[in-house]
Amino acid sequence: MENSKFRMPTAYTILFLLIILVAIATWLIPAGAYDYVDGVPVAGTYHSVDPSPQGVGAVLKAAFFGFYDAVDVCVFILMVGGFLGVVMKTGAVDAGVSNIIRLLGGRERWLIPILMLLFGLGGTTYGMWEETMAFYPLLIPVFLAAGYDAVVGISVILLGAGAGVIASTVNPFATGIAAGFAGVSLGDGIILRAIQWIVFESAAIWFVMAYAARVKKNPARSVVGVGAGKIQANVEEAPPFTTRRKLIMVVFTATFLIMIYGVIPFDEMGLPLPVLGWWFPELSALFLAAGVIVGFMDRQREDEIAETFVAGCADLLGVALIIGISRGITVLMNDGHITDTVLHWGEEALSGAGPLSFVVLVYLVYLPLTILIPSSSGLATLSVPIMAPLGRFAGVGGELVVTAFQSASGLVNIVTPTAAVVMGALALGHVPYDRWLKYVWKLAIYFLLLTLIFLVIGVLL
Image 1: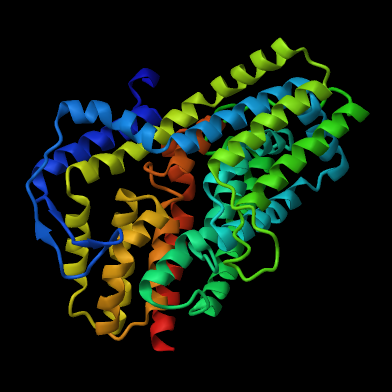
Image 2 (image 1 turned 90 degrees about the horizontal axis):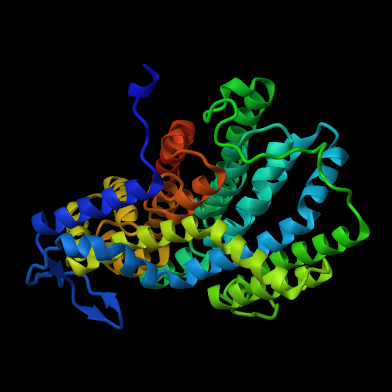
């Protein structure tokens, strides 16, 4: 019977179940800690500490503490929602999307490789990940209007940027931090990582284009089902693309370009361009200001702009909550003093391994570590100072430890429910998490096997 079929729980339920599991783990896993110098753990200093098992109260509060910890990201998401709410009310996006589809005239499939390459470049150069959240409400309707499903729109952004992050070449937030702790330069291993990026981005584009072609030809082959998981988009009913709407789209596009420019650390990439050094507070202010400007351009009243902006914030409130809840998992692990214990187990597993076995093991160890610590910069700070010295004893250079770390971190982040970007993107596209896994698992296996091949080649060279 239809009613007896299993239904995948919502993202909120999945994350709360993970919080409960982590809380149970704090009762079972011994508490321990490393000695830290300037916030960096020192290899070989792990020791037991007094246990701090997390109870029912901690479980209930974990999501709130996670929200406090991620408040900058959450506010940014709300500001993006408000901005999009004002812009959508002008009709400019609907008119612009319809105009693009008409201009493409059946060649919409070429949007997939072009956009994925752009997101991939952002991912490999400066770790474009959380910032992609702003693009889902914009691009999902574009691909729906072109005759695809929401999964294609999500994939173009998430897998495009994700493949870039997996093969980060000069990403200062993952590769740069890890290289510093490993005692190597950002340029060490960059040729291998550049080749890895070309291969991975090509594989991701091929994977998404093949799926998109199947859905376009037969909508019943969509993993979300016919008419399911879709945001409605109708090209025929779109408003006219007037001069005012064109100007609004110029401001709309400029806002996203300014966002991208503002967060790129050109100095760390060796480029002679002014560095703004923006992060979520500045980006939030950017979208707030842009929303007000667009509202006045559309001749909306002051109270109308305010009401529309707040309503737009409300549309993305669920995504902001998901980000906060997912961050609560890490908070609970740290409060239970089991993060360093899990890291120590990895240290013990890698001790005494030879070069080939070490590089394979370090990659495999990083896969579960990334699930528990989804922040790439946080994981690099915690683990690389311990993994890199072990690599030297095994005859493996620090650059390969860095490549193993970033590849594992990037791979897990496209599938794990602890990744706020994944759960937030799926929430925006109304795509159930189990359907996403059904769709992406083969590509994840390809990435895993390809990474192992690249790491083994790195050892042999």
